Image (cartoon, rainbow, N blue to C red; front, top):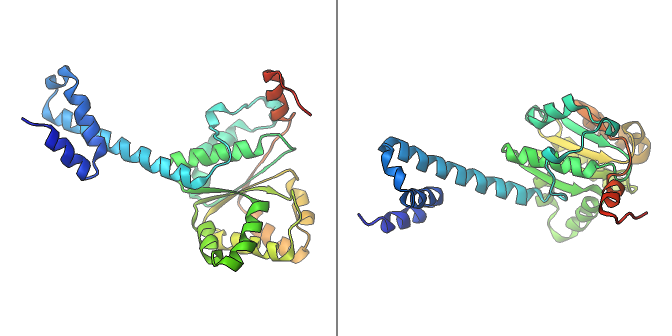
Length: 250
């Protein structure tokens, strides 16, 4: 029996996983000892895994995470102030499915962005669509988008993502127009999608940092509601890594 036409047909039907699985079976003489049903099951499993991997790659590409981070590599020493029980709960992504928010705070270099990206990576692996933005850059992009016709499309993408990461809240002052954009984003996502926000400032200082009391009230009322909080402590992780590498910098 000529098997190559079958493989070509599988590829033409976009069943690349089954095609690869069939090639693997042909290269394994012992596969003939298995019954037909088991060999078919292996082919179906190969196709399923191929599609899962392809979809994950697409989700990670769309997320545009700033750090290539994974929770398995997280430093959970007690000095960092990470509640392991909370972290284990967040790793299940039930907080995303329940449309809760997550607020991560800590000093410069504490690992806020890394942890946010690690949690987002975990969410992508569990089928969640995520997207990462540094908040100052996003606000500037929204201003430009008003003038080049992208504003509605960008706001729609921000509202649609199951998990939106807004990194570095409070690192730069926001204008009233930018606060209105932020309120629009938060309002569209409220109780519909999950938002993860990082900041050098403690949550208690966010109201003052946002400036406009009315807009700050409206934003924080929807952000803090149903929000989990992680407050990172300890020395800068960048400085610790540079000591290990022997390239310590200021």
